[in-house]
Image 1 (cartoon, helix red, strand yellow):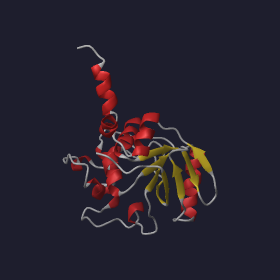
Image 2 (cartoon, helix red, strand yellow):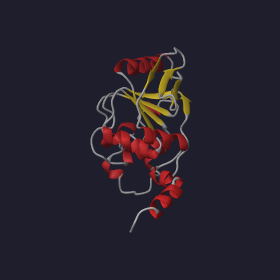
Image 3 (cartoon, helix red, strand yellow):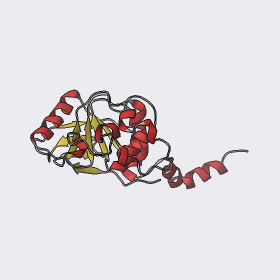
Image 4 (tube, helix red, strand yellow):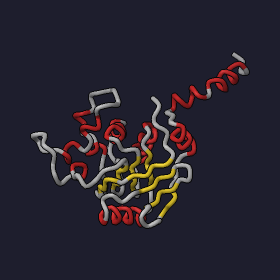
Length: 198
């Protein structure tokens, strides 16, 4: 399944300054029955987002009307816990295209890269600056430039570079998942195959 190309994202953000947010909090286990990647956004942070009767909790960040955008800014150690891909699916299906944190669990980070969500790991100092900027102005814009591997606050100009696997970077720039990548180089694969003895 191909995804939208990710080149430059300029967006406001939702702040979630909570450390050790695990995958069961991102998408509770009772919602893992589906195998399609759609529909999970409705239950993103389900137990934090809704009361038992299904009504939204007014004080949860996703329910506050002052926040919007395609970026989620999380606390340190975001995505810890189980290896469920559904957590990344839920983040994508809700509409986020980038998650920023000072530290990610490796499996969650890779799962995000596989579904078109860019995980941007920044320093603690930069994370604090981003949270402070959003606290000061809920519409504060964040610029994420994948080609330059740079994240910046447009209001202050403060910026920082981030790391990303080269293969995953190229895939995101082109809107490819792993299968798209293989299909794109099918000619090279076929040529290689003809040169190999059986």
